Length: 180
Image: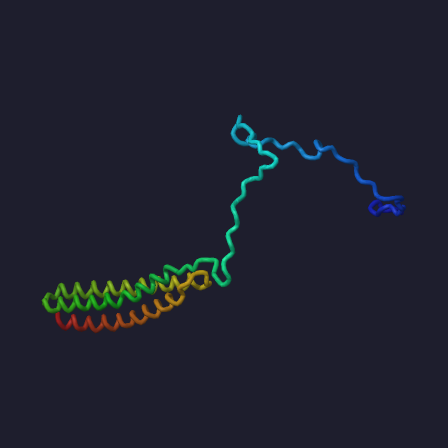
């Protein structure tokens, strides 16, 4: 029984014979000239045999040791959250000064309107600071963006400001109701 897949075990006499040489014209298929694929009737572009194709440009010099190769990008949400969280305090002082001026005039309608608007502006700053700071925490979680400390500070300041806002609003509401 013989297997067709096993090599023949008869010894070969002499060195191996190289394959017959293939003519150069038959070795490589003919390549159409550049321009034949583009616009019909375009003249083919001929390159001389000594002309090298255009290079993509020289590689950039490597960065110095210890210098980061990428730019440090800070989270905008973290920055805005911190700014809004801090902004609530001057707004609160401004609102209290407005209310003190309205109290001196003695108009009850202006007092209530001023109270509501100044409290709402400060509340809007607190909520915006909290929202942006939480978004900044999410953006900086993986470390690709910087500013995690600002986001944490924004959340803490907005939380403390929120508690102060609640207490100040209750105290001011009691004061406004006693004047009306």
